[in-house]
Length: 91
Image (cartoon, rainbow, N blue to C red; front, top):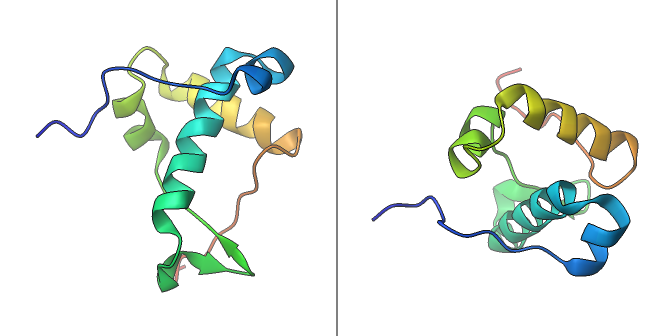
């Protein structure tokens, strides 16, 4: 089964406020955080987290380059829309 979705959804209010591209990524991140609820390894500092590399995100969104995804995620973090953290036990 192909795990890459063939359609993408977003919140219209977020699209109006932040733009369609950021609304799509917010929905993607929200989806994975909901999927991770209740998973002990996804809970850090009282929050549910998701991990996905930009290269993996690019597989979901082949119409965006990895450079564009990096820029969008950095911009979203700067705007306070998302948080990033490093919880890698390997270092």
